[in-house]
Length: 202
Ligand SMILES: C[S@@+](CC[C@H](N)C(=O)[O-])C[C@H]1O[C@@H](n2cnc3c(N)ncnc32)[C@H](O)[C@@H]1O
Image (tube, rainbow, N blue to C red):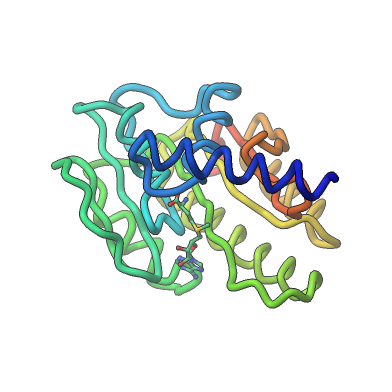
């Protein structure tokens, strides 16, 4: 019964994404989180890590408008979005050269770093969790090198034994840290989002 309800909800967000022209169901997660935490503002410079196929890029562009700038980074090529102020690059966020590459592709220091990066799921909870924390830590490293003072971070992590430790690491660098699971996330999934504001460590 619960499984059927979950599938219906999944199907609901999938149909909504198709109808609204978003490239992925994931768009609704960032929309819900943005509504609750006011992460994206007009004119912002935004970096979106693990951005393919581009659903979050579309939402970010809507929010920042013509005066902002959005950079998407992914291992996979992202089909072009038809906006001059949305750019994408192919890169591994865990690579040591990616923070600099990211910074070099921005017009100025970023206001927001988003990361929805996910590992390929093995089905072994502890392995998937550890890989997800590795990606989240890579996102934090990039954020530290590209964010302007007072910047914001939204990062996905799968829950597990290293989760609390990672939240602590984020807390050392930001004034405000919250954990949230948007409605559009599948209930049974381990994913949660960490929202951090007030970047102080630069
Ligand atoms: C859930 S999808 C992101 C969906 C996206 N937010 C959207 O709305 O379209 C996760 C992405 O993380 C990317 N990814 C995984 N590991 C990565 C890495 N090491 N570097 C860059 N991207 C990575 C995958 O290629 C995949 O496209």
